[in-house]
Image 1 (cartoon, rainbow, N blue to C red):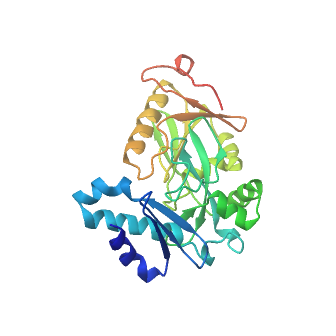
Image 2 (image 1 turned 135 degrees about the horizontal axis):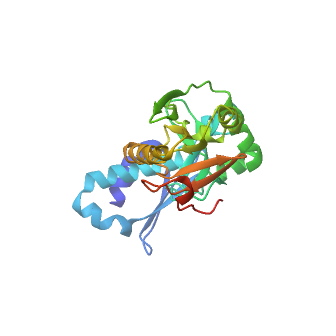
Image 3 (image 1 turned 60 degrees about the horizontal axis):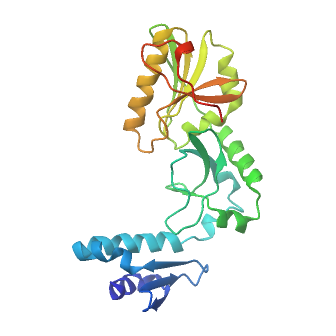
Amino acid sequence: MKEMLEKKLAENHFTSEYDSEKNTLRFVNPNNGAGVTLELNAFQSRFEANQSQVIDEIVYYVEESLSFSGEEMLVGNEKAIFPVIRSTSFPKENRAGKRFVISEHTTETAIFYALDLGNRYKLIDEELLQLSELSQEKLHQLALSNLRSIIFRDKKDTVSGNDFYFISTNDGYDASRILITKYLDKIKTTMQGIMAVAIPHQDVLIIADIKNEQGYDILAHLSMKFFTEGNVPITSLSFLYENGELEPIFILAKTSAAEQNKKPSS
C-alpha cells in the first residue's frame, strides 16, 4: 500500500515520510506547508478486499487535503464567502482533521461558512480563517451581506386554506435564506395566521402561513418529504418564527397548535 500511494502521488510533488514503527505515511505539500498523516493499519482490511478502490479514495483524500491554493484564500475573495446551514449532527471537521468555523443557530441547526469557487465550494475551517486574519464575527457579517445580495424569488401555493412559500433556486444557499431576517419579517406582515418555516434540505426554504389545523399536518408532510429526498438533508422539524426567533417544534398529525409537543428554544 505504501509503495502504491507514493507512486500515485509522486506527480503532485508531495514529499513523503514513512514511520515503520507506527506504520504511518505522511505527505506534505511543499508549496503551502499543508500535511496529512495516514495510519495505514486503518485501511488494511479494506485494502485487501479492494486495492484499487481504496487507493483511489486515499489519493483523493490526500490531494483534497493538501491542495489549497491562492484561489482558496479568504483575503481577496471576500465576495465569495457565504453561510450554509447544516444539521448539528453534520461533521465538525474535514477529512484532514481541521475543524470547521461554526456559529450557533438553533438546537437543530448550525451555521457553517463556504468559500464559493464557482464549480465547487469549500467549507471554511479554523486554520483558513486564522490565515485570513478575519474574526469569526467579521466572517459572519461578510457571509450574510453576500447572501442578501443574491436576488431570489419565492413561489406561493395554497393548500386547504394555508399559504406556503417555497424558495428553491438550487444555488446551494436556499436554506441559508432563513438567516435573512429582513425578508422573514417582511413576509410575516402579510400573514393572517401563524408563521412557520422549514429547511428540510440545503436547496429549499419553506415558509408557511398556518391558518387552520390541517396546515400543521401539511407542513409536517412537506418537511419529511423534502428531508428524505434532499442531497444535503438538514432537519425534518419545522420552526415557529416570532420576533426574529426560531423555535423548533414537533408537529403531531391531527393536532392543533396548542396541543403540539414543543422543544425548548435555543
